[in-house]
Length: 186
Image (cartoon, rainbow, N blue to C red; front, side, top):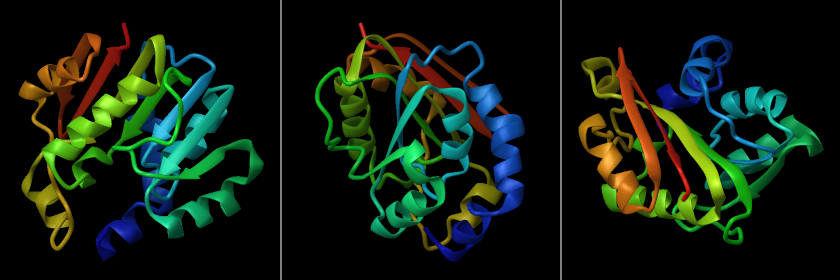
């Protein structure tokens, strides 16, 4: 992440946005079950909120510096694992819910995003839910990503990509500068 992201994503303002708007909107009507995996928590704004909402939470983060920081800040109540969302280090069917929020655009290619979708499907138990959100492109979004990875999701093609990963009951919707999705493991 570039400097702008490093400042913005660990700010009190972002934590408030996540708690008051992003998660309530992204997870409205979603049952994640009792064993939830978050892919790509970054600085942990969503992780802190999720830890209050679900019985058991595991988060997988690719950046070793952020892994250490999350372990220190969140303590033993959340299991933090260093790993790549496109190659998850968990057994098949290990989770009742998998989530990711505002991080998919940081995955360096559509192919790697599709690999992440397939891994989310693999680690979900039958009937489990994959849900999340991301930003849609705008001039402001592009500015925030100067010198940074930005592979934006297209809401018009996301449902087909999730279906190709093996999901069913897929819903994708956009509002303002954000999109949300949910899908089920058959």
